[in-house]
Length: 176
Image (cartoon, rainbow, N blue to C red; front, side, top):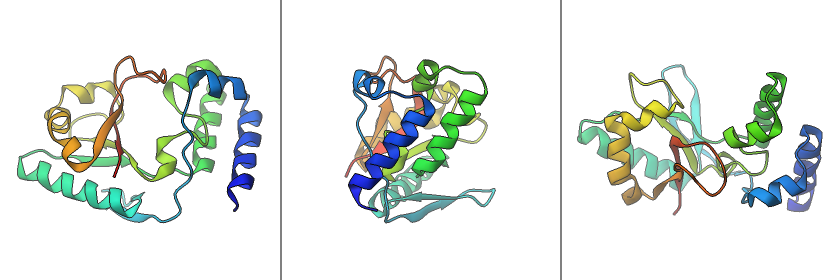
């Protein structure tokens, strides 16, 4: 699909969800094109294949091996997410009765999620509930804070981040 057509589709989806262009502009959200060249970075215990772009997948696997060598277990909870999947996430939160303002502190709108890029990962460690702030009290999080940069990963949403998202110690972005 040509990029122009893709942007038009995203604009229609945003409008259907009640997310105005002015809201996107006010939050200064960066656009993330949907990745097309993806590989399996990891298959979890439930059989879910987590996809990333090849460079991010290789960096994830190298980081996971290094963590394991240091006695730290890290695993993927989420990786690539399509624009359609992001639409579904936002719709589900609307159906739960959340307002758009609240939703946009919890989830990026379609077209603006780092997960679309195939470079974002949500990480967990055994014994911790996935995608919960408690992850920041784990040895895995301490290890990531000390070592993830070596592999090209940065914490996307620290406390008080400029984009207005909640603190997400589990969400990391690969920058080659």
